[in-house]
Length: 281
Image (tube, rainbow, N blue to C red; front, side):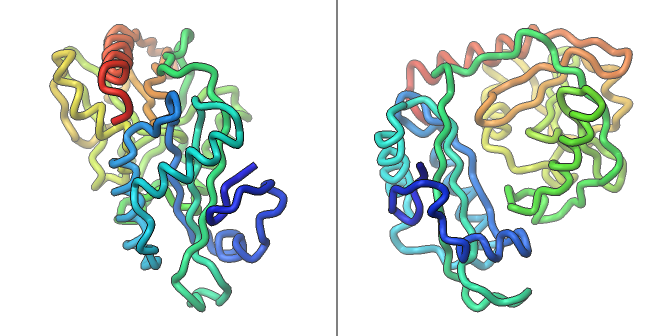
């Protein structure tokens, strides 16, 4: 069951015309949002990133497309699905036909909602095993900061990880700097310094990344947004992969290097406490 342009229907009923440009050209953007006890976490951050992405792609933004509208439509879907803790995907596509030049900049949208077992963020018990993915590079630029439907580097990186029995892979840009993982932003902890790649290097403008950067001081970490050389992985005490749905996943091994998770656990415990006190942010 999905919410397609306000109509609750089975996914199989999604009109093929709505998929045309997304399938042909990757002409779309999406947001994945965590629903916690019927509330969308970090909704303002998701909304502003979505609006910026649609403007960059020169899509027509409907007048009623407000944060409140998105929340209302998500709650309609959650009520229909019968659960309140889940992973919401909001997909925006340019509607209509055309070749590279579209016939229209109007949009279609739909929401999908899958259940999550826990309301709080739960850190992985066993550290992830990761490797560098160097077959294809992230190309830095304005488009690299978007969650677009054109996600081939992440798809191919995920296939590489599966074929080689890694839990995740780390992506690099054309200057061989580490920028992110195949499913989230990357943070390195060394001493009391928390470092993540800058957006200029090609890192995704992650919503959870933004909040980790803001909240790191609460556990006495100094944040640096600076380029990361893959050799820096050998010096780090901890390596994290972050996204809105999973929160913080800690890396246990990269080649012969092993990592701990002390600060990762401290950070995720602090975030859960904030959410319990403040509700959805």
